[in-house]
Image 1 (tube, chains in turn purple, yellow):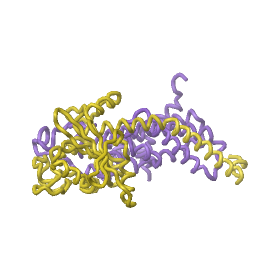
Image 2 (cartoon, each protein chain N blue to C red):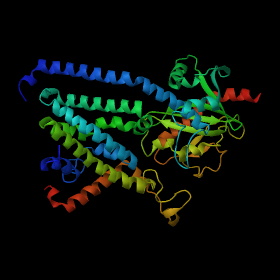
Image 3 (cartoon, rainbow over the protein chains, first blue to last red):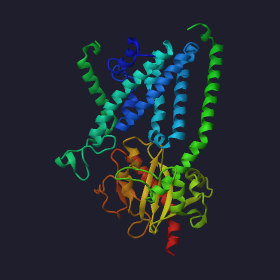
Image 4 (cartoon, chains in turn yellow, green):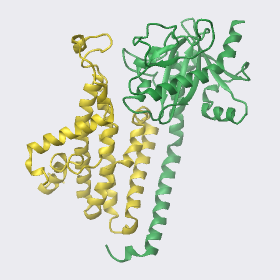
Length: 214
Length: 249
């Protein structure tokens, strides 16, 4: 395989910033709002989506020439659903604790519009290797935003990171809580995730004017 | 795309083929992993029961069960008796009582059939624990718990779990800060009547120092999950009251 060619590298790196699925393509917003109340959930969702999108893109790309165009959306949905069920069952059998923690997220992957979006926009028209890179790239781009949002929501909303009390204990008033700091419960609710995503979009576009649409 | 793939016949055949292939694949995966999954579930039940009576590997803030490979041994060491209670007070011993499906029993009761209530009796350091499995509804899906009590129906420990409560909100019922609040909390009021444990948003007792108020502090943003947990405790543990009365005689 050797080093990735320039084009291939672009497939991975573009979705991380200038063609980010969440902030630029505006895909996958629903799950970005739903599951980012904790950093850990964001990380877990990222890993799961990397797997499903990478593999799904390859499968769709392999069968792209034999899919009847009339039912292609249903075919795509079937592929995602089958992959998700397999992941879920394998985890349940070999890593039960992990599967319990992921619980609802695994099922939620099916509803993630990034997956259908990339199948439709990329895998149906490109070869398996390129599709694989595109899948990984987009999943990573999605994950970066998820993790940034999860970081701020958990830190400001619960005062913890990955469950560790980094700001002190709010009940016994240690750490910053001793100075009268309070957790902001609003951060745990979905609308604040939208506002955080909005701020990310704002920062990104003010740094790169080329992204601003007329 | 060629015209070939646009024809109705091709589309139909493709759809049928796809369903057969995917269906076979999933059935195969499911069937071959089934024994592993069932075994994991069985182990989990034993771990949950032991957790409630304080046999676990918790450190300061984690939730850690007895290791998978030790649980069978620990279970037979600490759980001295497994009972099945029917018609309020008829007690039978059954070494597989922990496998009773609470959901099924609840459906049976609804249909007017007999409901079997499992109860596990454990002994640790000379103390006797009565552990009851209960099940109810949260916001999105099922919530369930294993509650360890002493003979006065004072909670000695509890393990909560859920199928699909919101992460960061309702899902926090399985975090230590919530579960540990139940320890030493009374299920009976001061005059000895069963009232359950209310999940309160306004009891002004976030550290849960008052153990006799039948209330623990709620989780912010998880009102409906909390209400579901309180309702489950109230309706399900109530069924065990007649049995606990027989202990007093």
